[in-house]
Amino acid sequence: MKFAITSKGDSKSDQLKARIIQYLEDFELVYDKEQPDLVISVGGDGTFLEAFHTYNHRLKETAFIGVHTGHLGFYADWLPRDIEKLVIGIAKSQFEVVEYPLLDIKIYPQDGSEVNHFLALNEGSVKTTEGSVVLDVNIKGEHFERFRGDGLCISTPSGSTAYNKALGGGIIHPSLESIQITEMASINNRVFRTIGSPLILPKHHVCELKPIHDDRSFLITIDHNTRTYTNVSSIECRVADEKIRFARFHSFPFWKRVHDSFISDER
Ligand code: NAD
Image 1 (tube, rainbow, N blue to C red):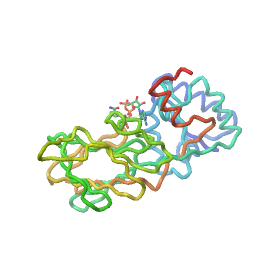
Image 2 (cartoon, rainbow, N blue to C red):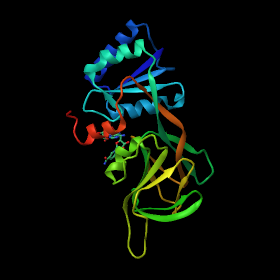
Image 3 (tube, rainbow, N blue to C red):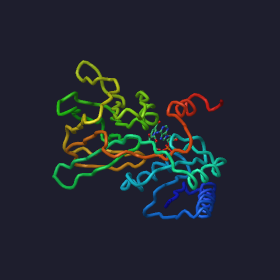
């Protein structure tokens, strides 16, 4: 089996990365940064998101594991002290794979030039530095509402515990193939009206965001990466056909992870 390791880049993560490489090479596994079967991210959830975006062109072939060197992460859920157990699991056993849904986002420019196409593990969000975000929200080809406010967040089930949760969205089990749209400070009065509640869309229900003003620029964040886009014709969001595959060596159910991350990790 071929493996790659990504590190947060601090000395603790780099040292742990070197140890894992040494251990796995002692078991005659091959370090291959280009075409790994397994990617181990060492650091935090941010490091894991980076690893996902580095290898998201080969999701069918690559499985992911996260080791945390700071506090317990949502994706980075292995403790450094359990690293020997993890290495033996990788070297000696066929690992189980657990798949989680992803978000597919396409950003269409007004001039018909190349579409920007992304997969997100946590979410995509749309904001602006030029006053309020104003856009039409269409769902399954039908106009749903005209949104005015700070922005919108469209999240995956596994991302529902991240930015989405801070915006008042619900936590969704990743076995539900869905995306969730949450509002950021919508303007609601006698003139302007939005639904005000998070919306959960199933697979194949496409959400299209169409800016009202042609000349506005938008800050669009995909997980941890933000870029400015001008001349946006529309932004299309749906449950992706692709999924992320996690290599599982022990059971760590989603609700237990939610409990340990947000309630208490004391047994
Ligand atoms: P960061 O360093 O600002 O970390 C954000 C925090 O989010 C970290 O504590 C991380 O462990 C946690 N996190 C990431 N994914 C999570 C998930 N799926 N479930 C629960 N917690 C999760 O930024 P980063 O490390 O580059 O991560 C980017 C992520 O930060 C974005 O995808 C977004 O979801 C999240 N974020 C959260 C808020 C908020 O809660 N108000 C605001 C902006 C971004």
